[in-house]
Length: 370
Image 1 (cartoon, rainbow, N blue to C red):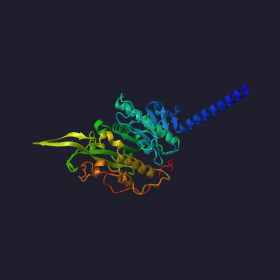
Image 2 (image 1 turned 60 degrees about the vertical axis):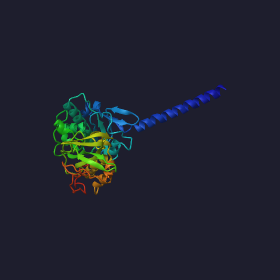
Image 3 (image 1 turned 30 degrees about the vertical axis):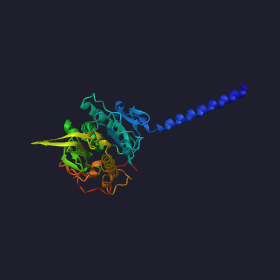
Image 4 (image 1 turned 30 degrees about the horizontal axis):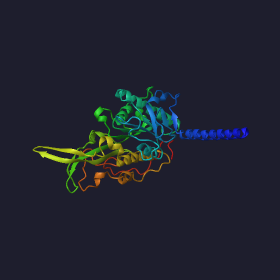
């Protein structure tokens, strides 16, 4: 009887150890993508506290990056209030923007840069500059492109502009030389007086343009007034810098803000009772399908033109052209036309420019492979 008990107990212990081992090995396997910032790499000293990735299960993890090998590393820089991925979403949620960017061939989201709002602008910019230098240095060590793609939203775009004008902590490297492409969304840099990106950076800028309107009894939009703004940043300011290189250009997301009533009295007119919230309003831009498609399209166009073995898109326009329209665009009302800087562009092409690169350079940089 005792032998039977010992045998059963031994079997249960063995089973428990087997299950425990499986759980541990599974956890290790799922974490193989996440690596701590190298402590012995001078370029990365002090960076660990300022970067992190979000995972659906683990939430915010500070001081880690997603291994990117020889792909183009992408750095996401949130706007005000977006710390800990409140704006980019999670890498393991396929429908989130971070995951869509991470899924681009030859590009990998390396970090979601986290900055403190208690620091001064210059300190935030230097933190981002250090993170860019760290990731670019790791990329060079991997025989990769040795430069990064920065995607900044609102204040994050401003920080990217500022960081690009700085040097690495040891003063040896101009950070602008380590940025291949910058994608800015609702760029607030003119508000804060941040400088342009250096001429060698491919810039793709995205802005929002709201038209205020009401509906009549037949459901038609009436009293349409173009604001030339996303409710916070003017279109002309948000798109004040772009380039004509593959992956550069301008995209403007247009939408309507509906109101219940429109009033006029002598020389004054005003709207009352907003209905819902405009899709392309400043705080909503990263959620707009067209904007997400444009970001992915711009990065894809840039990577395809710079990576060995990548297949360039025959027409980067297709991504924006086939993206789901915003709800109000099915209305028979006339589409608002921004007066500055022009009509919406397409990924990799400045607004209205029909020239689309169809082949990569003859001597693309080595390292980034399909």
